[in-house]
Length: 224
Ligand code: IPE
Ligand code: IPE
Ligand code: MG
Image 1: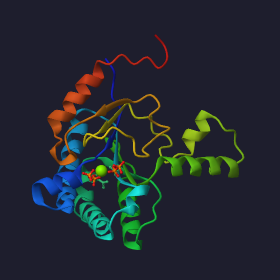
Image 2: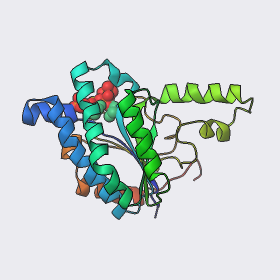
Image 3: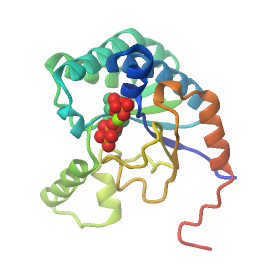
Image 4: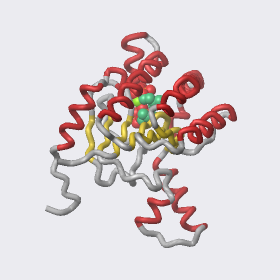
Protein backbone atom coordinates (compact mmCIF):
# COMPACT_ATOMS: atom_id res chain seq x y z
CA UNK A 1 0.00 0.00 0.00
CA UNK A 2 1.26 3.48 -0.88
CA UNK A 3 1.65 6.01 1.87
CA UNK A 4 0.42 9.52 1.33
CA UNK A 5 2.63 12.24 2.71
CA UNK A 6 1.83 15.17 0.47
CA UNK A 7 -1.44 16.11 -1.23
CA UNK A 8 -1.68 19.08 -3.60
CA UNK A 9 -5.05 20.52 -4.60
CA UNK A 10 -6.19 22.85 -7.37
CA UNK A 11 -9.35 24.14 -5.70
CA UNK A 12 -11.32 25.03 -8.80
CA UNK A 13 -14.99 25.76 -9.39
CA UNK A 14 -15.89 28.36 -6.75
CA UNK A 15 -17.09 30.93 -9.26
CA UNK A 16 -19.34 28.50 -11.12
CA UNK A 17 -20.77 27.20 -7.83
CA UNK A 18 -21.50 30.76 -6.73
CA UNK A 19 -23.29 31.69 -9.96
CA UNK A 20 -25.31 28.49 -9.90
CA UNK A 21 -26.36 28.63 -6.26
CA UNK A 22 -26.15 32.25 -5.11
CA UNK A 23 -25.96 34.29 -8.33
CA UNK A 24 -22.55 35.60 -7.26
CA UNK A 25 -19.04 34.30 -7.98
CA UNK A 26 -17.78 35.81 -4.74
CA UNK A 27 -20.25 33.88 -2.59
CA UNK A 28 -18.80 30.78 -4.23
CA UNK A 29 -15.37 31.75 -2.92
CA UNK A 30 -16.85 32.19 0.55
CA UNK A 31 -18.42 28.74 0.38
CA UNK A 32 -15.15 27.28 -0.91
CA UNK A 33 -13.43 28.33 2.29
CA UNK A 34 -15.69 25.92 4.22
CA UNK A 35 -14.36 23.10 2.06
CA UNK A 36 -10.81 24.21 2.87
CA UNK A 37 -11.55 23.78 6.58
CA UNK A 38 -13.09 20.34 6.02
CA UNK A 39 -10.13 19.16 3.95
CA UNK A 40 -7.62 20.40 6.54
CA UNK A 41 -9.41 18.36 9.23
CA UNK A 42 -9.63 15.35 7.00
CA UNK A 43 -5.93 15.61 6.06
CA UNK A 44 -5.02 15.42 9.73
CA UNK A 45 -7.27 12.37 10.18
CA UNK A 46 -5.51 10.74 7.23
CA UNK A 47 -2.10 11.55 8.76
CA UNK A 48 -1.04 13.61 5.77
CA UNK A 49 2.04 15.73 6.51
CA UNK A 50 1.85 18.31 3.70
CA UNK A 51 -1.20 19.86 2.09
CA UNK A 52 -0.56 22.29 -0.76
CA UNK A 53 -3.54 24.44 -1.73
CA UNK A 54 -3.66 26.53 -4.90
CA UNK A 55 -5.49 29.66 -3.79
CA UNK A 56 -4.35 32.37 -6.24
CA UNK A 57 -2.25 32.03 -9.37
CA UNK A 58 0.02 34.55 -11.07
CA UNK A 59 -2.60 34.55 -13.84
CA UNK A 60 -5.52 35.27 -11.51
CA UNK A 61 -4.49 38.98 -11.46
CA UNK A 62 -6.33 39.17 -14.81
CA UNK A 63 -9.64 38.91 -12.93
CA UNK A 64 -11.84 41.92 -12.13
CA UNK A 65 -10.53 44.05 -9.26
CA UNK A 66 -13.71 43.48 -7.27
CA UNK A 67 -13.20 39.70 -7.26
CA UNK A 68 -9.49 40.01 -6.41
CA UNK A 69 -10.29 42.33 -3.49
CA UNK A 70 -12.96 39.95 -2.25
CA UNK A 71 -10.50 37.04 -2.33
CA UNK A 72 -7.85 38.90 -0.37
CA UNK A 73 -10.38 40.16 2.16
CA UNK A 74 -11.49 36.57 2.62
CA UNK A 75 -7.89 35.48 3.14
CA UNK A 76 -7.36 38.27 5.63
CA UNK A 77 -10.39 37.44 7.75
CA UNK A 78 -9.56 33.73 7.60
CA UNK A 79 -6.07 34.32 8.95
CA UNK A 80 -7.14 36.85 11.56
CA UNK A 81 -9.88 34.54 12.87
CA UNK A 82 -8.33 31.11 12.46
CA UNK A 83 -4.57 31.29 12.81
CA UNK A 84 -4.60 30.73 16.60
CA UNK A 85 -6.80 27.68 16.13
CA UNK A 86 -4.49 26.33 13.42
CA UNK A 87 -1.55 26.98 15.71
CA UNK A 88 -3.23 25.11 18.57
CA UNK A 89 -3.74 22.17 16.25
CA UNK A 90 0.02 22.10 15.58
CA UNK A 91 -0.43 23.20 11.96
CA UNK A 92 2.33 25.08 10.16
CA UNK A 93 1.46 27.61 7.47
CA UNK A 94 3.86 28.32 4.63
CA UNK A 95 3.19 30.64 1.73
CA UNK A 96 4.49 29.53 -1.65
CA UNK A 97 4.54 32.20 -4.35
CA UNK A 98 5.89 35.72 -4.47
CA UNK A 99 4.64 37.78 -1.51
CA UNK A 100 3.83 40.93 -3.44
CA UNK A 101 0.59 42.02 -1.85
CA UNK A 102 -0.60 45.04 0.11
CA UNK A 103 1.54 45.91 3.13
CA UNK A 104 -1.26 44.76 5.42
CA UNK A 105 -1.52 41.33 3.78
CA UNK A 106 2.25 40.88 3.62
CA UNK A 107 2.57 41.62 7.35
CA UNK A 108 -0.29 39.26 8.19
CA UNK A 109 1.19 36.45 6.08
CA UNK A 110 4.65 36.85 7.62
CA UNK A 111 3.16 36.96 11.12
CA UNK A 112 1.08 33.81 10.50
CA UNK A 113 4.08 31.93 9.12
CA UNK A 114 6.24 32.99 12.05
CA UNK A 115 3.59 32.07 14.63
CA UNK A 116 3.20 28.54 13.28
CA UNK A 117 6.77 27.93 12.14
CA UNK A 118 7.65 25.24 14.67
CA UNK A 119 4.47 23.21 14.23
CA UNK A 120 4.81 19.64 13.14
CA UNK A 121 1.48 17.90 12.60
CA UNK A 122 0.45 19.24 9.19
CA UNK A 123 2.15 21.78 6.97
CA UNK A 124 -0.19 23.79 4.78
CA UNK A 125 1.53 25.31 1.77
CA UNK A 126 -0.75 28.05 0.61
CA UNK A 127 -0.02 28.90 -3.02
CA UNK A 128 -0.63 32.64 -3.40
CA UNK A 129 0.51 34.64 -6.39
CA UNK A 130 2.00 31.29 -7.35
CA UNK A 131 3.04 30.29 -10.84
CA UNK A 132 5.22 27.32 -11.59
CA UNK A 133 7.03 28.95 -14.51
CA UNK A 134 7.96 32.00 -12.47
CA UNK A 135 9.05 29.71 -9.59
CA UNK A 136 11.37 27.81 -11.97
CA UNK A 137 12.83 31.00 -13.47
CA UNK A 138 13.45 32.25 -9.94
CA UNK A 139 15.22 28.99 -9.07
CA UNK A 140 17.42 29.11 -12.18
CA UNK A 141 18.41 32.69 -11.37
CA UNK A 142 19.32 31.70 -7.81
CA UNK A 143 21.41 28.84 -9.17
CA UNK A 144 23.23 31.34 -11.40
CA UNK A 145 23.79 33.86 -8.60
CA UNK A 146 25.04 31.18 -6.20
CA UNK A 147 27.23 29.64 -8.91
CA UNK A 148 26.06 26.08 -8.18
CA UNK A 149 25.53 23.19 -10.57
CA UNK A 150 22.28 22.77 -12.48
CA UNK A 151 21.05 19.41 -11.22
CA UNK A 152 17.83 17.98 -9.78
CA UNK A 153 18.88 18.50 -6.21
CA UNK A 154 19.75 22.18 -6.69
CA UNK A 155 16.66 22.98 -8.76
CA UNK A 156 14.43 21.47 -6.05
CA UNK A 157 16.39 23.33 -3.40
CA UNK A 158 15.72 26.75 -4.91
CA UNK A 159 11.99 26.23 -5.47
CA UNK A 160 9.47 27.58 -2.94
CA UNK A 161 8.90 23.94 -1.98
CA UNK A 162 12.50 23.38 -0.94
CA UNK A 163 12.79 20.56 1.66
CA UNK A 164 9.21 19.44 1.04
CA UNK A 165 8.77 16.02 -0.59
CA UNK A 166 7.03 16.10 -3.99
CA UNK A 167 3.24 15.61 -3.92
CA UNK A 168 2.12 11.98 -4.01
CA UNK A 169 -1.29 13.07 -5.10
CA UNK A 170 -2.66 15.99 -7.11
CA UNK A 171 -6.39 16.65 -7.08
CA UNK A 172 -8.19 19.18 -9.27
CA UNK A 173 -11.87 19.80 -8.69
CA UNK A 174 -14.21 21.59 -11.08
CA UNK A 175 -14.11 19.13 -13.99
CA UNK A 176 -11.34 20.89 -15.96
CA UNK A 177 -8.40 18.72 -16.88
CA UNK A 178 -5.43 21.05 -16.90
CA UNK A 179 -2.63 22.10 -14.57
CA UNK A 180 -2.91 25.89 -14.83
CA UNK A 181 0.77 26.52 -14.06
CA UNK A 182 0.79 24.57 -10.78
CA UNK A 183 3.87 22.70 -9.47
CA UNK A 184 5.05 21.59 -12.92
CA UNK A 185 8.43 20.36 -11.65
CA UNK A 186 7.15 18.83 -8.41
CA UNK A 187 4.37 16.68 -9.90
CA UNK A 188 6.64 14.74 -12.27
CA UNK A 189 5.52 11.48 -10.59
CA UNK A 190 2.35 12.49 -8.76
CA UNK A 191 -0.87 10.54 -9.21
CA UNK A 192 -3.42 12.94 -10.71
CA UNK A 193 -7.15 12.89 -9.97
CA UNK A 194 -9.56 15.15 -11.84
CA UNK A 195 -12.77 15.50 -9.87
CA UNK A 196 -16.03 16.60 -11.49
CA UNK A 197 -17.46 18.30 -8.40
CA UNK A 198 -16.96 22.03 -7.94
CA UNK A 199 -14.74 22.88 -4.95
CA UNK A 200 -17.57 24.02 -2.61
CA UNK A 201 -19.35 20.67 -3.21
CA UNK A 202 -16.23 18.58 -2.58
CA UNK A 203 -16.34 16.87 0.82
CA UNK A 204 -14.47 14.52 3.18
CA UNK A 205 -16.09 11.52 1.60
CA UNK A 206 -14.89 12.48 -1.90
CA UNK A 207 -11.44 13.14 -0.49
CA UNK A 208 -11.29 9.80 1.32
CA UNK A 209 -12.41 7.97 -1.82
CA UNK A 210 -9.52 9.48 -3.80
CA UNK A 211 -7.04 8.65 -1.03
CA UNK A 212 -8.33 5.06 -0.94
CA UNK A 213 -7.86 4.75 -4.69
CA UNK A 214 -4.38 6.19 -4.37
CA UNK A 215 -3.40 3.58 -1.75
CA UNK A 216 -3.90 0.83 -4.29
CA UNK A 217 -2.18 2.32 -7.34
CA UNK A 218 0.94 0.56 -8.53
CA UNK A 219 3.52 3.33 -8.69
CA UNK A 220 6.36 2.30 -10.96
CA UNK A 221 8.61 5.35 -11.10
CA UNK A 222 9.92 3.95 -14.37
CA UNK A 223 10.54 0.48 -12.94
CA UNK A 224 8.31 -2.51 -13.72
C1 IPE B 1 -10.93 28.71 -8.05
O1 IPE B 1 -12.22 28.88 -8.42
C2 IPE B 1 -10.50 29.71 -7.03
C3 IPE B 1 -9.59 30.74 -7.54
C4 IPE B 1 -9.03 30.77 -8.70
C5 IPE B 1 -9.33 31.82 -6.63
P1 IPE B 1 -12.60 29.78 -9.68
O2 IPE B 1 -12.82 31.17 -9.21
O3 IPE B 1 -11.60 29.63 -10.76
O4 IPE B 1 -13.97 29.13 -10.10
P2 IPE B 1 -14.48 28.86 -11.58
O5 IPE B 1 -13.48 27.95 -12.21
O6 IPE B 1 -14.55 30.19 -12.25
O7 IPE B 1 -15.80 28.22 -11.39
C1 IPE C 1 -6.43 27.59 -11.06
O1 IPE C 1 -7.75 27.86 -11.37
C2 IPE C 1 -5.95 28.49 -9.98
C3 IPE C 1 -6.54 28.26 -8.66
C4 IPE C 1 -7.34 27.31 -8.32
C5 IPE C 1 -6.10 29.19 -7.65
P1 IPE C 1 -8.15 28.85 -12.55
O2 IPE C 1 -9.62 28.89 -12.57
O3 IPE C 1 -7.45 30.15 -12.39
O4 IPE C 1 -7.56 28.11 -13.82
P2 IPE C 1 -7.90 28.31 -15.34
O5 IPE C 1 -7.74 29.78 -15.64
O6 IPE C 1 -9.29 27.86 -15.55
O7 IPE C 1 -6.93 27.46 -16.07
MG1 MG D 1 -11.46 28.31 -12.34
